[in-house]
Image 1 (tube, rainbow, N blue to C red):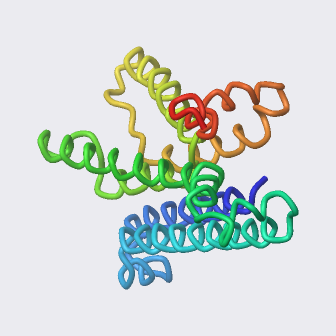
Image 2: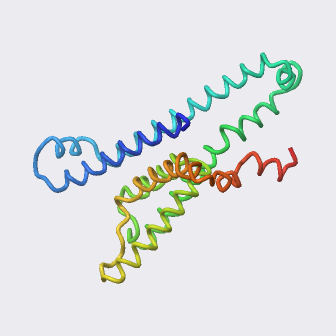
Image 3: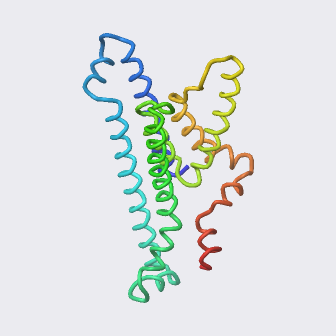
Length: 220
């Protein structure tokens, strides 16, 4: 499992713990939990985790890019793909497809979903999401990465559909997703890194390979 996914698991577990403590603070009148969230809003905690995740993953990708450059410099063949033999275009293209591109796509997907969800929620007077839910959902999208966020969306649709049927049968109204965004993101990362390879289904996610897409679309 890549270090970025290990970090994502840690952040998601911390987020889930903070979420549970925050809900507990709403049910008690005193104690350290109440004092903690009286000082730090849960939305502030999520923003901090968002920033920490972005900075850490960007730092790791930058480090990997530097290591790759160092490896190419001493390779008798690949050194000709670097200056002074040619410009940095090929190297940056390679790094974009191999390391940077998937995380950029995940970040853009999270940003797009955030904008759409906030507009939808505002239009229908906060009917669909609680205050922190959109940030929790989009943090899950970003940390599951590409193509991992497809697994995340599949789980959301699957669990959401099943829960809706159960809630409808028992006349419970609409299924609350507040506590499911983070566990489903955790599940998506575990499924992508462990269950899918274990079942020999890695080719399914391989079909979403950014490198193959660029090669087929642009011809290189």
